[in-house]
Amino acid sequence: MISHQFDVVAVLCVRNEAATLPHSLRHLVRSGIPFAIIDHESSDLTSDIVLSDEFRPWLVSFETLPYRGWFDLAEQLACKDALIRKIDANWVIHLDADEVLQSRASGEGLREAIARADGAGYNVINFEEFVFLPIDAEFDSGTLDFQPMVFYYFFEPSSQRLMRAWKRSLALSGRESGGHRLSGDGIRIFPENMILRHYIFRDQQHAFDKYANRVFSDGDLAQGWHFNRLNQPRQRFKFPLPHELERLSSPSSVEFSRSNPKQSHYWQW
Image 1 (cartoon, rainbow, N blue to C red):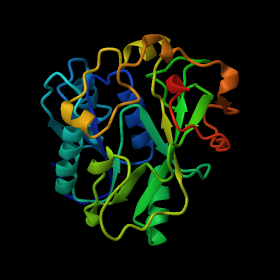
Image 2: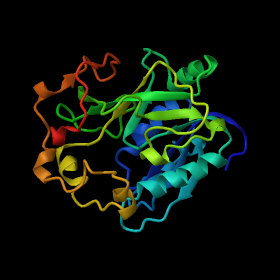
Image 3: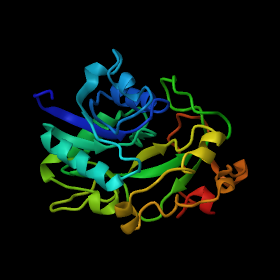
Image 4: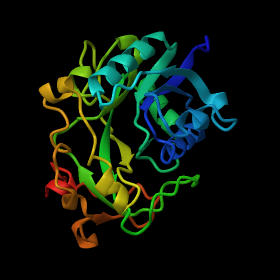
């Protein structure tokens, strides 16, 4: 554990994310944000990537969470909370390996956006989720920019559902909501929602395979989590037609349409 204080630290729990993790970490590095990794006993090259010369200088902490044969979000979030309590940071970010966070202001880095919210007296930042589908281009794990995809949908089953950045001193937690909404005292949400780009699938085959054999923990299911991914027929994950989605003018554009929010993912439409 590095002992000095950080402005912002992102915390990720990952398992077999060698294909997507480098892209997410590169965006953190470009924003000047270090990260802490919890490896859920990956069997691919995930740990090698995290400990590589490219990313090790930005690594605050590297821990291992045992994998018992099923996906246990509650356990992952508890492990994240414990790690956050040990990190000496002003702000923390809850992030997944297939996500990229950014400011809505063109040219403003994520770290600068968080500092702007902090300077204005706010202590929580909400993000809006835009789900990209690789209809026009497959996921490029080597790109230094945003993924070369332009087709997306605005996923918003409820408002202010992704409070992914907050001041660590508040001792907030998102465990009760599955890592979405924070709970605790003294929350002041920045009035400007920021952007979460969710690259949920790398290609059509990955869409068919990702949830096909995933086993969820009994505890998670008792919470009512993962129902939108559980026991779905494989064919439902076939990508929609382009005209059913929104389209950016370029992969790096921040001009997202919010006029047609979706309350469910495309395989449930």
